[in-house]
Amino acid sequence: YKYIMAATKASKEQKYDRQLRLWGDHGQESLENAHVCLINATATGTEILKNLVLPGIGAFTIVDGHTVSGEDVGNNFFLSNNSIGKNRAQAATELLQELNSDVSGNFVEESPDKLLDNDPEFFHRFTIVIGVQLPESTCLRLGSVLWSASVPFLVCKSYGLIGYMRLAVQEHTVIESHPDNALEDLRLYQPFAEFKNHIQSYDLDSMDKKDHSHTPWIIIVAKHLEKWLSEHNCQPPKNYKEKEAFRQFIREGILKNENGVPEDEENFEEAIKNVNTALNPTKLLCVPLNICHLLNPVCFQRWEVTKYKYFVTVLK
Image (tube, rainbow, N blue to C red; front, side, top):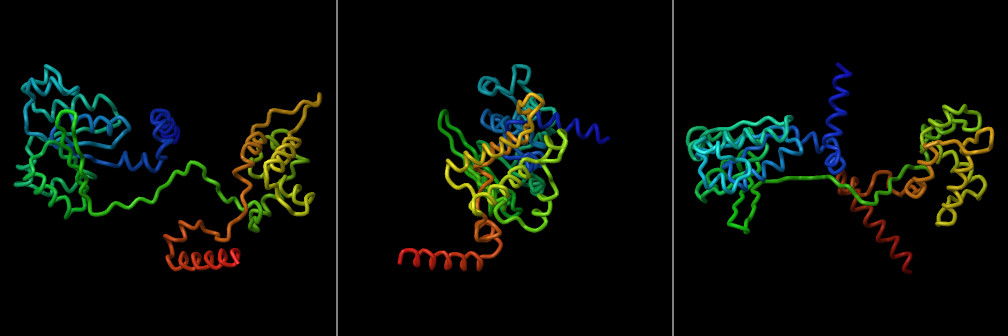
């Protein structure tokens, strides 16, 4: 069972590699748990749904009471000549499901107005409802039902090369960021007791080749930083010249073979590569400022006052 699960996860990571780099595992999980309702399988509607099916949305349901006409086939990639006369929701669902076997597709051969008359709670089950080319009266009725159920409602209309989208939702809070140049505080300058004890448990000088090449890069940086501080009056490398000297200091720690040639140790290369981002002084706050602000507004206000007083003192 574990082997099957691991194989499935590896296959999924390979399939969705590019998007996982964008929104991570948790973002993909949210996508896979989503159930989207599309009202009207027009060219615009099916194009929107295609862009959700390909990245692996969990499920979709198309609600459409229209039959496929020749005009539909002429402007919709997800309908064919064989679809003419069939229900448009059914025909589009069959072709959209071919894009991704991970996605579950459903269809309802009813107009949204009939569903609102007979079973308005039908729309409560969805993560989001997308309405395309709907008359204003239907939008207002459906929007009222979805608003009370806290289900986002995306209204889309297109006129030739012109179109618009409008989102009706009570509130959508996102606390998510992917900074381009994140500088994490690893507390290497002020390691807490447990981390310091863990660092001291490694003895790079007495390790065999296997253990030496499997030592985590952060331990390598921390061990060499200890030596650097002891030799440089407790001053860490700050400028480019000093950091370059620190990289060379780490490079000298790579094991050498019997001919004096450095071994191929990827962990040391990784440590050298991460010198710039790892050697950051520990900030005043143990918790990042933006997180502190979210958890405790009072804490943020105190920090703002402290920061203000500090800058005033510096200016004086």
